[in-house]
Image (tube, rainbow, N blue to C red; front, side, top):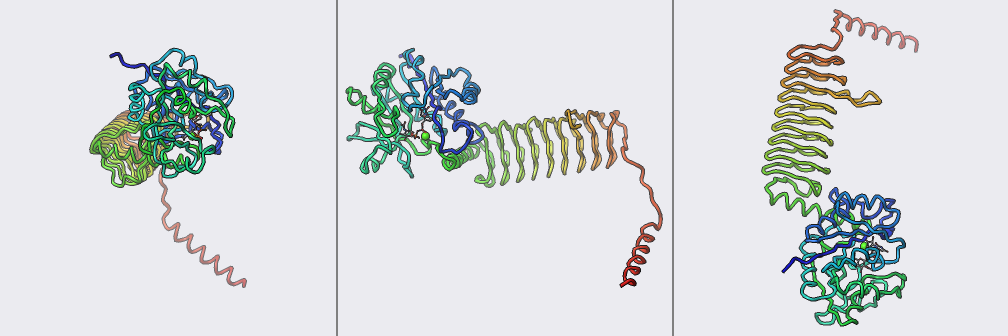
Length: 454
Ligand code: UD1
Ligand code: CA
């Protein structure tokens, strides 16, 4: 049998007022990735053949994020905000291409995984006209309720329109629905706006299908997959679940997390085997850590590649564009940005390495700073392999330090240094014998003078 075609429609055009934010709701992040990107990823992994995202007219940022996360996505504008069924119909041209299945997913449900979506598609393949994912909510406030008669799903009642016994119904509507392509438009076209909010509720599709003698199926899934985000509190709760899942996956993949509950990962963090992550480490987007590396406590890493067996922290900050070679060492209070630090090179204490290249096995002494910014433009610093930069040196970019060169401590280096040379960029030390003792003598005299005046 040929694989069934499936159109996914992701809704994002709601107002999101309960977030109390200027940012469109679906652009808020969980585990460093937008809610919308999470949904699009899950949808992509459930075998869809086309994806449509419904956006509100002014949401160019949402449309851009949809394209970024899923380049083949087609965006449709919902001109007026008239409810979830109205939003689905904004994608009518895509529905009219007659997909076998239609999967409707709300953009504010970021924890959904492909497995429940596949179960929903299965219900349609087995003959249901509509299927919804239901769950038992710890706190059901705000969710629609699934109304069942025996095994049969006969309606979904929005909380505002539900009576006490309907509210008590155990299963909540997760908001994710599948429809058979052939009857979808007939059902959607019959949805009206006779409810308290005068909106076209997608949830009415169930009662309508029931009235048309079509079958509706409820598929029960875990609460975590279904968490809808309407408020900042729910965003924080979803973050906690996402972190728990990511930590679990890292542990299963052979990463040592000494205190997993203190490590923050991004959805795209890639960590190799036998990597040790000490307590209190934060990973931003686009980080790869190769096998056997160690990340000590209180480090913050984003947009960085950490080579095999490298060591980072404690208290290190790796910013985007950092590439640490195998066995490189970045120690405490060192910040690295847009810099390649080759294999075996070290910057162990109190440094800033920005817009730089540090050759293999070079040693960057404590307190060394690459002065990369002149107030207008950024410049590059290049440090050759095996070079030794004495402590507390300022390398004023653009500047190149040759292979094996030696920079005396406390230097301010403004000119290129050839390979294997010594450069001292500091004033010569002067010594005045007895000077300090004489100074102290003067101070004592001065004090006496003050006292004698009293
Ligand atoms: C909805 C469901 C509710 C379910 C809950 C699950 C309806 C009527 N209610 O309620 O049964 O328990 O989700 O999380 O469907 N949107 C549009 N255009 C609109 C209105 C909404 O695109 O005109 C989008 C929103 O951006 C959002 C989604 O549809 O992504 C759901 O809207 P929202 O207002 O969050 O619905 P809930 O009140 O959470
Ligand atoms: Ca919602």
